[in-house]
Length: 295
Image (cartoon, rainbow, N blue to C red; front, top):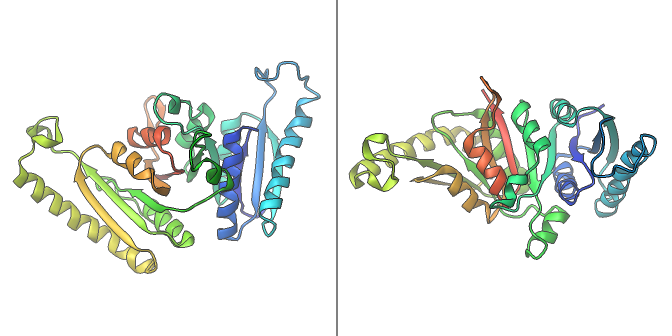
């Protein structure tokens, strides 16, 4: 099978929004769109009255209905449907490895409700070594709700940079996405003063903060220079400040088309981890979030 942009479908409003967003991305990448539904043989707590013979029928019908919708809204896009039986997170991780991009839906309501991103989506993000995009659905009364469902991709690309763990994979993903979308790239780096100056960012003296900020801005400029040359059509702005990285990225997401964060692809003693910043952004961002693993 040729490479595709793949969407994990479960019949929810969130996964349909993810399909709409992925359809736009597939067109820009000139790749087919693959609608993948994964079902397992365990008991279905949501539809307990459906027997084992009926569930495969619904597993086939749901992606077919979404495909019909995608073909109506994107007639020039090749759309495929697929269904597999297995453990959802494992099958989706396999899809992320095989295909050009994996897109999943998330509730993305922010606050306490945002803690319901979904165990499957979080497991996939934590375990795969390939980029995954999670697309939230705003609340129904939100002005941007309908545009999100249609796959609207307006807004800048926001990139969170960790100077302590630099990654070509993360930078290339953000620049390439901004280039395809014709969007500007906003690079954010947020740092905290060393413990010597206390737990509050405001505890650092203005002189120290100014010197550290200048040094970090110089490091960011050096880091970004090769990518500016590789993608000369992408307007880039840089912001370096003290504070909390997750909070700054969530704030920037309000006007963004995509937020890009990195995740170190390493195994902790207690198993795969997402990282505190990526985890917070996934739960609270109102924009789609791309999590890009790197060494």
